[in-house]
Amino acid sequence: MLKVGILTFHRCINYGSYWQARCLAEGLASMGVEAVLLEHASDRVNRAEWRCALQPLLPAPTPAEDYPLYRAKIRKFFGSFAALPLSSPFSLEDPAAMDDYPLVIVGSDEVWNLRHPWYGGYPLFYGEGLRCGRLASYAATFGNLASSERLEGWAEKLRGFSHISVRDLNSGRLIRDTLGFEPELVLDPCLQFPGAIVADTDGGREPDYVAVYGHSFPAWFRNAVRDWAKDRGYPLVSIGYRNDWADAQWIDAGPEEFAGFIAGARAVVTNFFHGCVFSLVNGKPFAGVLSDYRSSKIRDLTLTVGAGRHVMTEDMEPSHLDVILDNPLPAAVSQRISSLRHASSAYLSHVLQ
Image (cartoon, rainbow, N blue to C red; front, side, top):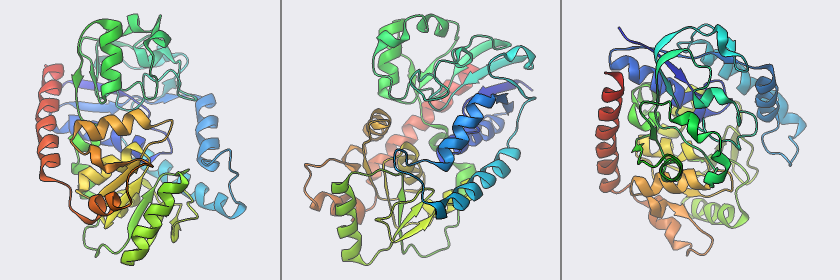
């Protein structure tokens, strides 16, 4: 059995990061390989990650009553991390102690984002220092890195990859501009291998609430969503973060609880990439809004699957929200996802040969 190492951000206190790592590991295992997540460790990264998890709304301070809830959320993530298929640990800064692998797959997540606040600039994610026979990427992304000028000196490292795939149009453009070829466009692992998500969801509840996922929403969007929900009598429930404009808060939800929560919602409003992804996985009506950090990811995802109209802008009429949240997702969206799933499977099959 081929042993494959997966290099990604699997220990982030972030629902999307956890689930993309788990889904890729379990998805590869379903394809007949032994897949493990490479357990890179860094005290510097841990301090930054945990500090952000306790104060996610900076520069707005965390209310004192929320600290115990964010700590409980972190503990739930630690419990979920322990159940992942992990390699022997090694230093992120000095990976010489890592095990050898015939193949390492880098991605998903923002593994190539040089602007990431604590992972940006680690050469390991560009393949340097990895102990492996072959290198490939799956659904890797440069995140909000928009200019190829920042890639000078880094792009050459990517030439060591035998196969490259990305999950968004911006990353595809950067690869094309710097390496001179068109990479494969594939689905995020949560969309490609949703089996673990579906198995951990609770679809038995009557959908009587609207999920709010994200934070720092613009005022015009908050007001439009509140008016829409109030007109229909739907409570707004914020998960993972405090949003005072929502009717209720569930800050300390763990990764599995998050999956079930989105599955049980009537609709989803979000400014996070995986808020859109989990809406698509569960076939939920959703409204997304762009933020500076996540704009390219959300825009490219929705355009790729044919759900571009689900991204709201301030100049849209309020009635547009009625259309996208009161109606099921168009059948063309699921058909497009199915087509991309087939192409993504073909890419992975080729990589695993």
